[in-house]
Image (cartoon, rainbow, N blue to C red):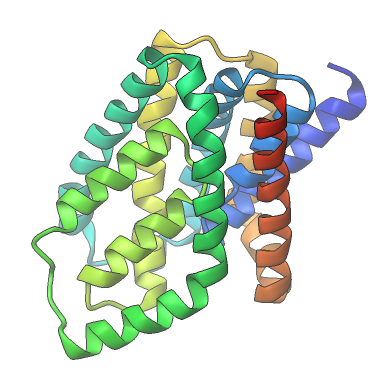
Length: 252
């Protein structure tokens, strides 16, 4: 890895950490960079999961005030996130790499769609909570499914979690976002331990993303909030679609 490539990975990690704290789609920054530098998709995903884990933790610390009073809820849902992350990790390491390479462009495309429709989705979730507030009996199952997705491929995991939590919980959006960050930290932390034990990451890449995401998770959120929502979503979608196209072209 050249110095310029290392710098690009580090900067991508900083951006991913900050965006994960605010929106939840940082993988769409780091994953395409790794693909562009020639890393196989599965190796890129494993290294990325390990590297982003510290960033989700510092992002959670940044939202600690909004987590007050949610301790019991967090513990209950964290168990489902942990189980989901393990399920996703087992799927990634045991399914043929061709399956991952075929599925990931679709997952990235769906993630981009989620990012585009997020404002409308958030409005509908707020209206639904006002009409029918409640805990939602399917919430643990939804959190488990989001954890499985995050353990397998983490792009837009945060947006999936916000949609699940926002549908079921009658809470302020900032408190939901704080809970999302904490559950994403559980998923990424569990997946990181799993991949360190059973996977074959690129350690230089994982270390660079970890350093960057640690900085970005705590301080990058402020930088992300200075971007207008339209510009931020446009940048993420452009990067994500580039990665999806690159994956499709590599198969031919």
